[in-house]
Amino acid sequence: MKVTFLLSSAYAMRGDVRSALNLAGALAQRHEVEVISLRRQKEKPFFPVAAGVTMRSVIDVRPGVRRLFPQGQVRTEVALWRMLRSLRSDVLVTARPGLSVQAARHAPREILRIAREWGRPAVPGPVKKLYPRLDAVVAATEPAREEWARLLDSGPHVHAIPDALPGSPWPRSRMDNRIVAAGGRWVAAKSYDRLIRAFAVVSAERPDWRLRLYGSGPEERRLRALVDELGLHNHVYFMGTTPDLTGEFAKASIVANTSHTADLGMTVLEAMGCGVPVVAFEGTHGPAEFVATGYNGVLVPEADERAFAGAMLALIGDERRRRSLAAGALDTAIRHAADEVGEQWEKLFAGLR
Image (tube, rainbow, N blue to C red; front, side, top):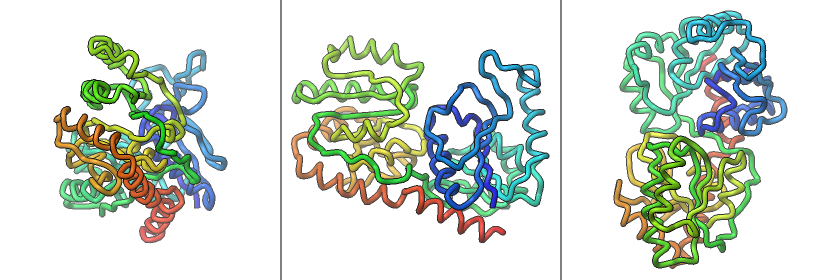
């Protein structure tokens, strides 16, 4: 069976890209798998691509590359339509509603067309109109599945399959480093400013602990200014980007997530794969769908920075509890291993065919 994944950019540092590449690698063990990137802006993908997965792009925007089409959104859409109409595959999995709408319009009907969704569409009109042409929609969690089912009351059927972690064995935290870690894009929605302010309370009581921030983004200057303002330059470290976030999380004893968006929580799962408990804010989406207080981490009331600091301090002061939560975190991650998730997708393919 040939399985094709269509991503906006397979070269970006995003959790949905990471999840799709992990799944592609698992399926490539038994199928022919390709990943098509609508745009290619870098020489190599940020995240590793498994052997057996082929890569190609619709539009190559790397500097110095001769383009078949002039730049512009209209020309990109024309190139996408041509690619979809000529696609020869058994299964097409599209990530993000914009690509899924185009697949519904232009991909051959004999191909199984599946939309892989993480959040709700910004403009639901085209989705409600064109998604009934698709064969299935797959959400990452049960609450997300229920939301999509309500939106698509006239079809297609919506399934829930979790995101895939990289193939094991995963690096394992020894839980003895005095480090709190956080990772992802430095954007306003991730609320790293709340984490920094909470850690100011932590460092006042436990100056021997450090906060490491992994990633990059437009908020970096403001976050660095906040660190200087709070006098935390010896306690908070900006570590930059890394394709091996799990390896870095394995050096920590706590992973913090202050995001208030409906994201898919890949950093939370990657932390749990290393056997590290997670402290996160409560909510209906993202981290709260994976973190269970007392089992694999701690959920804190939304926007309560003092409570977030208190939760971190409680774990810092109780090594036995940290290790107990670490065991629950690892058990949670096992259910998201790429091989197990890949088998769920294969059962879906078989059922749809």
